[in-house]
Image (cartoon, one colour):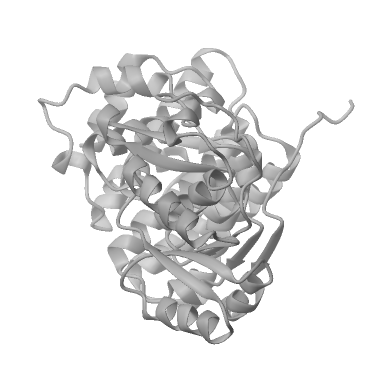
Length: 383
């Protein structure tokens, strides 16, 4: 039987390993001398990087990212970039910083408004010009945003998280240095790590999976489950290295094979309620996997991939594979990962959330269609 055709897109250059971030200034200034630096507020190493670039003759303007990017934050970043006449955008931080940096780099050369290009609530127009060069340096292991072709933007007026998406938004350079994640607080480590694990599981069971994404996911799923278990217990450099790889693999996989119902729900829940993305994904993963597997069995469809994932995750977290996803809520309780009761309650209109999520772009790659009633039941299990 002939091989199914597929395509695979990723960042122009990926550097992975401890110490690769030492090259950031040199690589960035290879794209120009007017650098828009997108960053969080409290990381001293980014101050040192800014000062290093300035010492090398660069004109560096800073944009501080606070939480997940909104349309308003993106507009402010575009204004700063135009005032600087930026040659390139450098983003150093977590997934929200990466997304803001990619969106600014994408829209700076064009002439349209932000809403013209957003999916779902905007015009979803393609970019009118090629993005500025963009260099991504992640400091967390979760989203894999350093190798994805979209940026997630909050539209407060619509209560939605939506994507700005274009293959040209893939960063020119991704520098993935696991050392930058050392000693991240435990709660943040587990939340971002659960996001990373979800992002290698959903593409593996996706309706758009291909041989390259399969290879990445097969390597990353067992590694991610083991690393999360280790980091739930104590700090561990090897586990940090493994989670950085899992996060990178997840970004590569989702950009080429899509996601599923976990992220379809998470986009709406995060936009409406402000709950942390990784936490939502972790709490929805088990119930979604159970529902998907049951739906496929009922339809007489093959579920070997779900059995693969159950084996890999079960071994990694030391749970019986035949019930690992049913047991995941209790496992997360033992790890002291918050449930979603802080954001969801008996008064929350879960049906409306489920109806919105059913139309989300992430849902299109889910291996089966889950009815609204099933999506409501999944959310109830996360409360």
